[in-house]
Image (cartoon, rainbow, N blue to C red; front, side, top):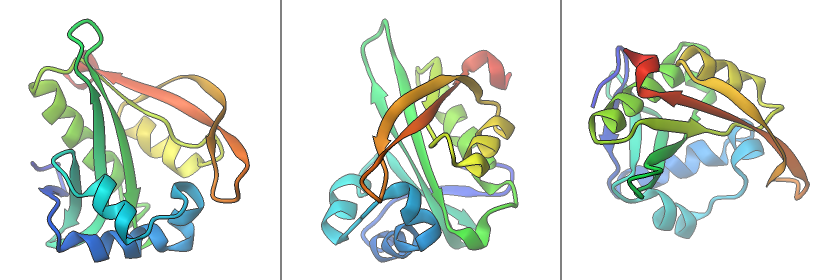
Length: 161
């Protein structure tokens, strides 16, 4: 699947080491916590995760989890972009591309929940069309072990039309 500038490719075993490098970068690990080889294999090697590529180079990863109950069908997204590729609109492009894919496959709403203090991520999601729903207090444990707030943001199918 493709955005305006990025291509989202299904994850293969070859992506594992690249994802470990991305998630292990201090600027990313601060938000994503600790990922080792086994956790990457278990959580990121599957049909709901994609490598974000720019001109054939892996810039990051994007994934979704879905609720399939027909009355509540939606997907929750997550994204990590290596710092060398940040600030170019690639994250928003990848979010829009995955949202279009999910909307075309029966979802009517997608969510994302960046840390409230991750202003770069919150801005990127807003550029992709996500709207802030609210702050979830003490939502997620940070890499330092403390709990921090998350911003719940959503995008509905009509927002991309």
